[in-house]
Length: 278
Image (cartoon, rainbow, N blue to C red; front, side):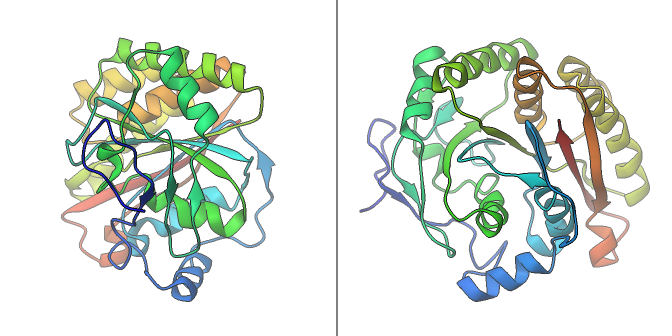
């Protein structure tokens, strides 16, 4: 099985794009790397959605690990991330095939993926957007560490208007309601890019405040007006809208840090935030 380049052709097996760079490509080494970032004694609870970063595990792994250590993972996970490569459709849903990862293959939930494309015309079946994109792939080792068997619906977003985020979320929720089984919504995002640690934290706290208030429109406007270079503002907005439809009551900041706290370079950092929506 191999990847076919056309948007109209299906991806049968997606190979890892960033194994060996963002995380170890060897299975056992990857397990040890994930274990270095998790919190073993954290209490777990069912949640509606999360925000988790997608940088190299050396830098953002502690934030991702803190989030994944605290959640119960259902049998289907909807992964929503930004499109860094510019390939493919504006809202690209991978609707069939498997993702090959060092810890094992993960199947697409074809039923739900196709339902999302049926429920909103803006969501297009498209594997090409996912071929080299890292924002969803980097979530998978943490998910696989904590749950042996699950399926995914990968959704890759180019830049969207705030109203489009809401419309997309409504289509996703119609499909989820048809699906009739629990899902976890994962929004993949890093925060401020390449500012000083102090400035990044100041800016990111403003965006985090909007997420904690479960205010996607406010988040979108704050990111725009404050020039916050948060790459996953659209995925987080869509996730928040979906969680509201599912009856969200609270959004909790689990952990925030910057790359400077790992590298020692506090002049040019990337911020990482991990949040849980209950």
